[in-house]
Length: 462
Image (cartoon, rainbow, N blue to C red; front, top):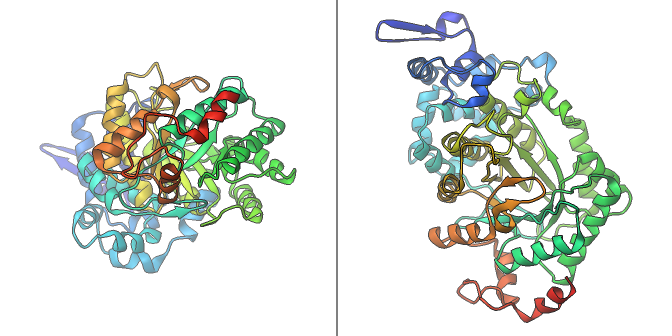
């Protein structure tokens, strides 16, 4: 495709775009990371011109012109070689603008979207998101239903799960246990009880894995645990006999960015195979947990001139290849250099959720910001509510919404209760039944104020 095909005239001015990745970058809603990289539109008018040119582009163009070269990038090869032509066929004749209209129409119901997902590439998803309003992102994502399972079933309609995140700055066992108890008493933890270790080595990881396993086993909690360490540590912990439920890894949208994380596709496949060999799931065997975030490829100087949101969508191709139980964007964690303020974080979180769901991923979101960003909890309330309306699979539950180990602001156990109550959402069914049986939730799923008797001995041991 020649340069003159990437152009659009607005009034007396004709805007030309060098290639497909330039067009995608200029069409992207404003964010500080693209400005930092010198990729962003120079004016609102240029951005609109790029969006209009993008809307006229055939979806097939993304198969014909990879934004990162096939020969030098294994993520591109994964996207191209794994593309399902039969799933793509019903939408192959569409432009990006036509694709948006189809997604918003009644014909694109949950079943149709699930059938199309293997035929949609990350670049197609990113492109259509760039010409959608927030309400469009919410409406389409809500129609995408992605269900996964391990010890419970996640992603069902009218359910929202939570990751109970009991981090501690010194990995103190009593401090972690207190946070776990606090979260369970507020109905959090059905997605996973997941710890970011302050001391990241195999011995410490193994100790924490055993601790989590003992808690889940003692109280017969239908959930799964994860220590969010590097995948090589988890493989070694499995080799040493640790009772690992889920394998965690941060992933990105280019081979070079993943190398900066110390991973490649072969290593992820090895880790998944190791976890599957343990057979620890009861209702399913989805054993992978991935985290992503806009700006990770740029921060590693591994973005190949591609805008950060398109790079982010490409990370979902990596995740999709390994059939994960959980995926989430840590949307505001990288900082204001990439998403400057609450407005940019809100838009990015909804884009990430939309693109991942469109690609068939069980997507959640860490609704978060760093303390030096131009954002606050009011912004997070807006994003949390919009994600709840959009059918987000899970969010975080952090004591007081303040992660004292990672030093950022997220969502609290109370926030999860809020969004469930306002939108009529419930925990995963097996976990909900356990909450009722344990006396934490009453028969009508309302939080009880008194501590259930089963947990009183645990409090005394802290």
